[in-house]
Each structure stands twice: as C-alpha cells, then as structure tokens.
Image (tube, rainbow, N blue to C red):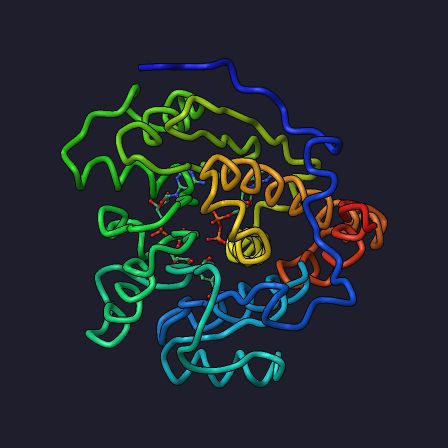
Length: 285
Ligand SMILES: NC(=O)C1=CN([C@@H]2O[C@H](COP(=O)(O)OP(=O)(O)OC[C@H]3O[C@@H](n4cnc5c(N)ncnc54)[C@H](O)[C@@H]3O)[C@@H](O)[C@H]2O)[C@@H](O)CC1
Ligand SMILES: Nc1ncnc2c1ncn2[C@@H]1O[C@H](COP(=O)(O)OP(=O)(O)O)[C@@H](O)[C@H]1O
C-alpha cells in the first residue's frame, strides 16, 4: 500500500478556498448543498450542520429530513429550503443512528449516494459507503472507523484507530476507495491517491458534543461551492476536507478567545465561521 508521510495543512494551503460571490453569481451558481442529517433521536445535529453550512458561505441549503429536525432547522434558519431539489453536493448521516433509520430516511440517503455528486458521509450513513457513485469523503471519529472496519470484517493496522490514526486513515482510504477525514485532537486526512494531511486542533475546547456536526456543515458547504472542480479532480475533495478541519479549528479558537480562552459550544463555532472564512477568501478579479 502506498503510504506517504502526512503533511500538516497550513493557513497558506487553506487560503483561497472560500469563494466570494461575483456580479455574475446567483444563489444557484454559488452552489447548493443538500443535507440529510438529524433524526427524531438526534434533531440537534441537523440544526448544527445546517447552521455551519450557511455560515461557511453557500448559495442555498436544501434540507431533506424527518419532520422534527426539519421544524427545528427552519425555526433556527428560515433561509433553508425544505425538500428535494437540484443540488451540487450532499452532506449526509450526522445525527442519524444507523440502527434506527426509517425506510423514508434510508431512501433519502440512497438518493444522495446515487447522485454521482460529491458527498460528505458522516456518522449514521458511514455503513452505506459502498453505495457511493460520486467523489466521497467520510468523516468518522475513531470509534466510528473501528466499527466500520469491524462491520466489513476487515482488520485495521492496529487494534484501535486511536493507536495509529495516520495508518488507519490511509488504510481506510485504500480499503473503501474514498477520502477519509479521521477526527481527533489531530485530524488525519487521506485519500486513495496517497495524499495525506494532518490538521492539529488549535484548541481542545473542540472536544464537546456537536462540534463534529459543525465540521460536516463546513465541509458540505466547501464541497457544494467547489463541485465542478471536485468532479474534475476528486483529490480536490481531500484538500477541502483538510481546509474544513483547519477552518473549524480557527473558528473554535476565535470563539474561545472571545470569552477569554474559556469554554465554547458547537453553535459558538458556527457563529465564528464567517470571520474565519473571511480569512480564507479567494482573490477576486
Ligand atoms: N446535538 C446532537 O444532536 C448531537 C448528535 N450527535 C450524533 O449522535 C450520534 C452518535 O454519535 P456519538 O459519537 O456520540 O456516538 P457513537 O455511538 O457513534 O460513538 C460512541 C462510541 O464510540 C466511541 N467513541 C466516540 N468518540 C470517540 C473518539 N473520538 N475516539 C474513540 N472512540 C470514540 C465511544 O467510546 C463509544 O463507544 C451521531 O449520529 C452524531 O452525529 C453527536 O454529534 C452529538 C450532538
Ligand atoms: N481533544 C481534542 N482536541 C481538539 N479537538 C478535538 C478533540 N477531540 C475531538 N476533537 C474534535 O472535535 C470534533 C468532534 O467530533 P465528533 O467526534 O464527531 O463529535 P460529535 O459527534 O459530538 O459532533 C472533531 O472535529 C474532532 O476533531
């Protein structure tokens, strides 16, 4: 297996990844993200992922999910358009329990996976990775990646991903044929082409419930606004994954600094995203 030494993703690498709209743009041309996240068990995850996508900068977010999370999403973000429609990328799985998926929800997940569009695949949709038809990035934490390997009866490089996350991220990228973003204090990003990056979190206040759902929203927005480039070259999705983790960390540390280095919650990270994204704007002509 090809294994390259992972390189730390820097501000310069991430710079230029956030696209400001031009006079020629409209909400559709900027990119539309389809979101299938949240469930009756975890409705809050839908709110967090949708909020983060809006705050990262995207033309439109279409939310497709169960009635309870949909009501919360619309109450928090009336800008969100409910129901299916044309999109440029998908974010699916956050806040969904794989063993509690309804027939309807499974249908929406399968619809997204069969679209041939870029997909960010999280949490309760990770087991569906084999159904992908477009460029895909999975965003597991260590526990989820271990479960994914166990379900496939595949042995990982070590007993648990936390022991050697770099090796696990690379092994998963090769085993599954997708880009992998393995979350942790150091996030490991790898793809089947041998690209490997690390993103070291600038604050450990990130270790709280829901921050992974915010990360999914950030990456979903970046995927929707760069869909054409990703379809042209799937390794662009790997780089955007590292950029999403970087932006997530920058927003988190800014939110914590704003309260004297004190604790933050996931929505604080989303609130700090526009300023952090402003620091990564692509040059305009
Ligand atoms: N407000 C909300 O609605 C929230 C919903 N969430 C959703 O809740 C669902 C369950 O996610 P959870 O991750 O809590 O539970 P999981 O059931 O996926 O994972 C729990 C298991 O994995 C292990 N584990 C968890 N994180 C680990 C890590 N970083 N390293 C090693 N092992 C780890 C734990 O020890 C435990 O055995 C997901 O769909 C998630 O998106 C969470 O994001 C929390 C917030
Ligand atoms: N000790 C830590 N220091 C810094 N960041 C962390 C730490 N632990 C986890 N993180 C980050 O916090 C986020 C947690 O995501 P996840 O495990 O999916 O939680 P949730 O499902 O509750 O959203 C990830 O972005 C991960 O990289």
